[in-house]
Image (cartoon, rainbow, N blue to C red; front, side):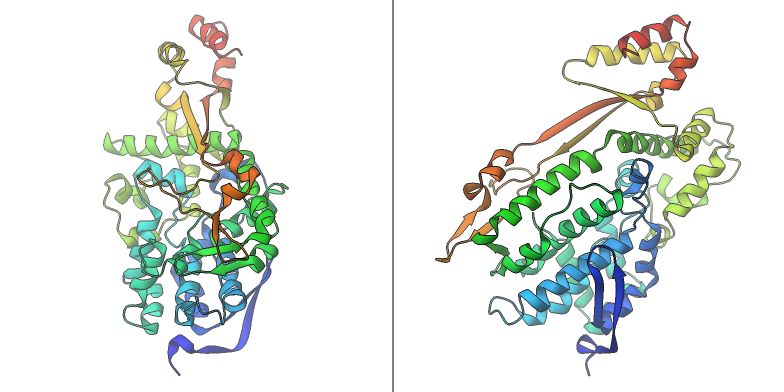
Length: 431
């Protein structure tokens, strides 16, 4: 029997709090889960620093990746199977791409990427195509199979229907993380009727569409996504912890560039600091490694690195005030001067952080970040774009919401009361 068609003697299941069970029958999927590159995802949190805001948010990229795989498995085995628009030969490719779509995420994901100008999707492709255990498993399916999986994840694969399963405005990736993140944070916002959405899904030549009768379930999904972004993903306390994490990494990189003598040499960071990260270097990084260094940096001579590391580990976060960069830029400039006067480095302790989200948009040719619309399938076979049919979605369609906050160490200001610069800082910040 060809490896691509090989099944396990007995189905394996993972008990899952969101989907109840994750089912594995394909030998290739089971082998991929067992690779060291995939097992590394157990050591990368799905929500980065959010556990400092919602204490239950300790779940991993491993959990999420299995969940995305399970949703795609249910779609291709239960919903699409036997339909003429679906090509059965794409089944294993869809399952592998779903399972591996987040393989290249690094420690604390997006904050880490911003500091070192990295892209987790690039590393996902490099791991899939490189000299790795994952590549060896995929190559057993076919010589060109790793390339196909990488193309699906990069959204360049020729079969756009396969791509849309894990990358569209309503896909298995989003459907899993909204429900999983809601479960582990304990909020009610991210829940929607996924069973109904799966029942009304239909394949077309280039994307998944939804029966018109299921419009309200899709509306519910869109609103769940909107609420999760503003109530969980962009929570100001989480953003404060991300600001501190980012500043720790910036400070460590700056000190390295200044030939600072670390008490404990940060070997794991050298390739990051020197901007020559290999796949081998990258795969050695996980959150346990980062937290180890933050722990020992509490003992460094550099007061900024020491303080920021202490703050992150002990959750002594920055406070914040609402801030409008367009109207308050003079105030920010004055605060920077006053921070310097008071001996507080504004580069690390006065930070404007912005969050922005576009909950849904339809296709607008030529615009940046073009988005394929969600289409509803009428009884007569006509496709109608979602916001044209739904007043709820139309109300938020194409509307980008942006929020700015100014972060600072309130404890420093409190300790410095009596100093003239600190007094003016407190007045400007209305403390």
